[in-house]
View 1 (cartoon, rainbow, N blue to C red):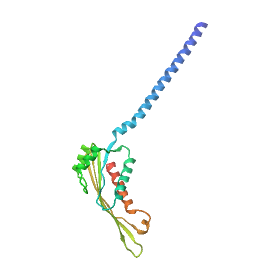
View 2: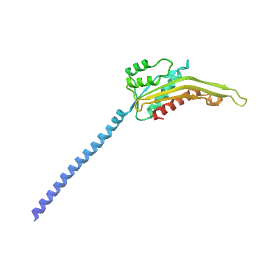
View 3: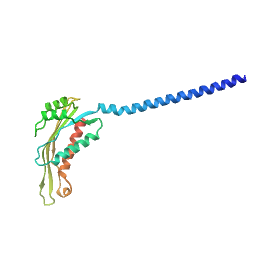
View 4: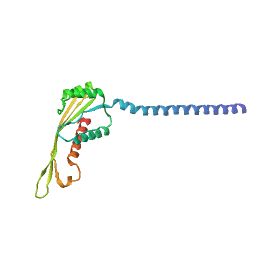
Length: 204
């Protein structure tokens, strides 16, 4: 009885020891599997991200190069703030854009479709600026500035087949004194760019 009990205890300890090793291996395997899946998810999201082609601004405001810089900066800020989109730039796309667009003219829906297809882009966005200035409104109480901002935004979504076109227009009025220390006109232009980009990428 003693020997059976003794060996029985030994065998129990051995089984317990082996069981512990197996459980550790199983847990380690599960942890490694979960980590592998987690690391793979960003890659999957990146592969499924919609590619966006942002065309150069059609700037019809003579001498205003700053408007181009504001356009690109604000458009990229919105693009980078939204998940699921990635900017695409390459020689092939540039060649297609040059082929399908004309200086001083906003591309048509057909041109945007061709750029999306031949340039392999999911979404193509273009904007045109025609007027950007402010005018003084004289008053006995206080002078005011009235903004004159006019242009257009267009886009084509190859994934949905939808074409977007919207007139950009802003004629808001503010007291002249509050604009003395900042570039009110270009800030409003930047605001319009962000609004249009948000609408296009949100599908509104």
